[in-house]
Image 1 (spheres, rainbow, N blue to C red):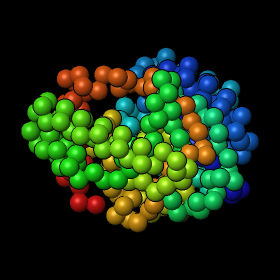
Image 2 (spheres, rainbow, N blue to C red; image 1 turned 90 degrees about the horizontal axis):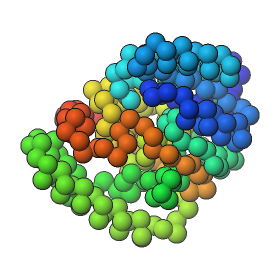
Image 3 (cartoon, rainbow, N blue to C red; image 1 turned 180 degrees about the horizontal axis):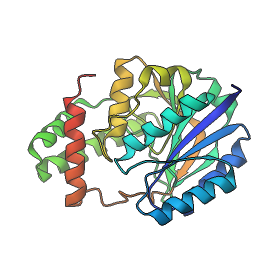
Image 4 (cartoon, rainbow, N blue to C red; image 1 turned 135 degrees about the horizontal axis):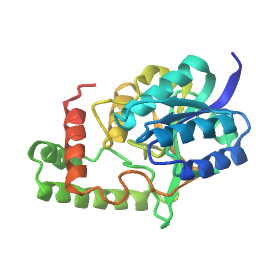
Length: 267
């Protein structure tokens, strides 16, 4: 089996307009890749559209029930490891656009790490890392929220986490490469050695929240470093299913279920 540099897994659930731009950005950055489009379809029409698009682009297409971000990506990862000999598996949201992905830069880290790029949204906000460190006080409050479900506790966590994140962002503003606790889930690369240790990557009891925390904690327990490399660059348009409505009652319910699964894990 021929070795390739990258194997992308992209979970799609909302139509394919963003995905087309994402695919074009891959082509501008690499000619040595495979791509698995995982369709967690909401309709038969979208499923048919995905199949036709995949055939046109000569990429792999698999369809799975909508059981969440983790389950869909796990299916794509299994397909990738069963069918391709790649160096890096890249999990990417369809609403991301690659600005700079250099193999020379990525390969400096070897195959035993998880690497995240600088991720900037359309408003210029930098999204990586999700956490520089495992902040004890915010995580303590977050666990309390997972038990109580109190909206007040949730807001306390959000305020504390923002303070800790802003402070660490300031301290590390000049660092181009640094080890971090958790990376943003919209785009990250897993070296093949790290992937084999980490599988299954995602906990499928988590539907659409807290997956990054799970990957971070599992990686920490397995001594897999997570690295932010700002020499790599991605734009995240944030057109996914959660958008800016993460505090709606329905979103809070889903998040609580995922949080309880996260804090019940012993890793």
